[in-house]
Image 1 (cartoon, rainbow, N blue to C red):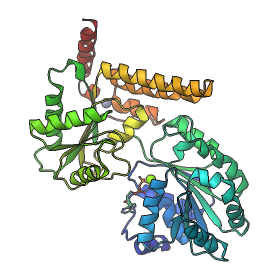
Image 2: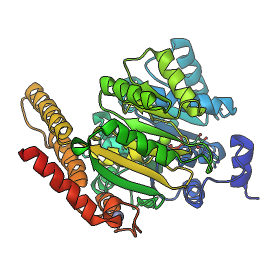
Image 3: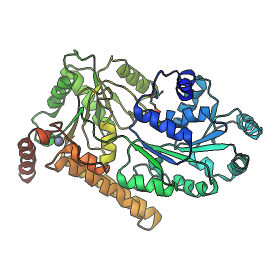
Image 4: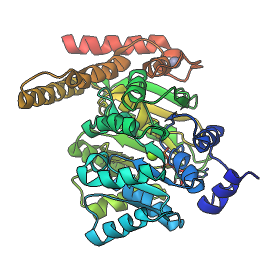
Length: 439
Ligand code: ADP
Ligand code: MG
Ligand code: ZN
């Protein structure tokens, strides 16, 4: 057994790597002679790709992550495994902060992983610490998690991530690993440029997932959309012979979460709403009931699913459109993590489309008014949404559209989408919707 495999077991308690790719990335990061770019789906185990090398390294791995909540989660998990990790953030009590700085000033600090937000990393108060670590050769590696946040083309652009590029030029010789779940081609290029990655080794999981079946149903032409959704859920969940599965329905508003959950329950399937309007305790309960299989369907706004890692999600239905094709791929991709056949469906409605279009344009206008000028990246929200609409209204393979959007080549769909199964049905639906709208 190599020292890497030993550390995987002894520090993390895992018997093997999640995938060949995870192993390849860890080895490349440990080697440390090149920058590394990682694009792997949520749940693939990207954190381990810098955490394990951090444990094996002499110095400190600095991890940049966009949200204190995400950071806290990881730090807690690491500490529970007795791995010396902590975070410096604005919420940290002064006493604890002092303890961390004391450790960092030692000749060989105990700390292995230091988590910071990009704001903290750029803040003047943090610079002496950073310079000191650097000049003593103790900064082994920089890990930038959720690296798509650096791109103006990304769905979660964070201006503070842009400062990382400048920072990197000061940290000459410190290798960088950048990680993200879903990045369209132009976002990947942006990340590499903005973070000044030097000929990075790039690891990307293919976008195409052959066990997911994609289709689009025009909701406006259905006699009873809720019954339709119910039948879809029942079919996807099956008779339980493949083990007990579950599903997610995504809605845009709290009201529609309530309504859809109520209707599904009325039709005889256990469903619970999940949205920001619920008390925290109710939300936690809904989520844990769903995780345990006591509730089969969770009807949620997109706030649900961040960090949720459940293998047997048999379907993801979108009652409303996602705001971009990238978001849609990520949200629908929570289906079928166990590799078994699973369904991803959008209940498309032109009314819903027009409403979202209106809201997105209003938001763009509001931002521009606030700033008094038009920024190119304001328009991204619009073009992103247009790609989402295009996906629904197209006559073509859904898998191909997604793969090409992310810069992958056209996959072999093998009838895993409505168009490849029967293009006439897709056309008939579009025509029916057109007739409806001209009536
Ligand atoms: P990502 O950042 O890619 O979404 P995470 O790093 O949060 O994924 O990991 C997802 C889950 O997988 C975590 O619970 C983690 O502990 C687990 N995990 C990671 N690597 C392995 C492995 N080799 N074996 C088993 N579980 C793993
Ligand atoms: Mg992650
Ligand atoms: Zn297809």
